[in-house]
Length: 210
Image (cartoon, rainbow, N blue to C red; front, side, top):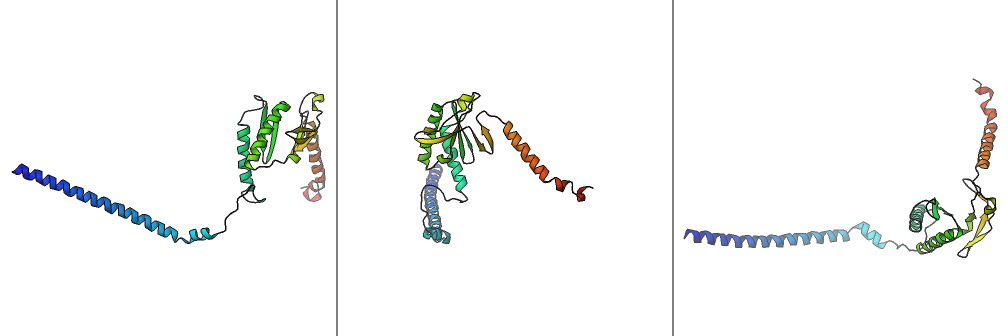
């Protein structure tokens, strides 16, 4: 008799536990649903959300406004993406062409015209896909060689785009086809001497003798 009573008591306890677990799960589910509903109501009543819903929509298009704070950042990101796809890395010492970027300028260094035309074509196609427009009117072409006959270049055309051929150009400093730096050194010495002698009277003025 005692064992039957214990077994019956255990069965009653198990049934009661199942009922309690079921009730607990229902309460927990109801609590979560109520919480989600309250969050949705609060989100719908948010004044900031309502303000942005009634604000004027932004028109999408190519390019950014000149002078905008994000203009340079977005352009540099797009330009970096284009360069990394066309020229993933490496030096001109180990391949036929290389892209060099500084600010919003791109320099193409190539061992021959065929390699230059190939990398320029890929870069131009990717620029069109990204909505970029390269300033070809300001782009020039120069040949660098120790042989003077190879430095005499004429205007050329790549994919139908004409480029002016030059023997030297100025980009911060003067870059020449023979890679000579003596003229640049002389120009800097002359500029330094000019600045020094223009201030010479102030340096040796009577008030500065002590």
